[in-house]
Length: 119
Image (cartoon, one colour):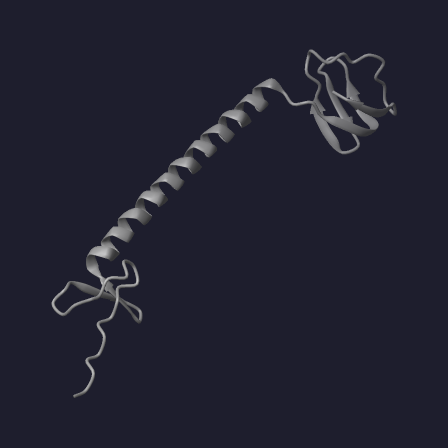
């Protein structure tokens, strides 16, 4: 008498797949539809949690960026002062043109003055 072929096992739950059970084929893999649905549900929960974490991180980064923009971030400059207007507080160091904030003292700045400081 020929041996009966063993029932295939579901790769997700390891239980046998019997005739008449709801199954689905993914590529060459046969699995219970209930197992696939459960795995899809778990994966969607994981993706939702990951998306929520990414949104939280983006919100924190946006808030931090806004705070840095309003606070003003210290900048270190090195170069020669190539343009300077004390009335408008506009200076140019090398090719960088900017306005010096009111709380930064201008001191003895003059054209050609080497800048090796932070502001």
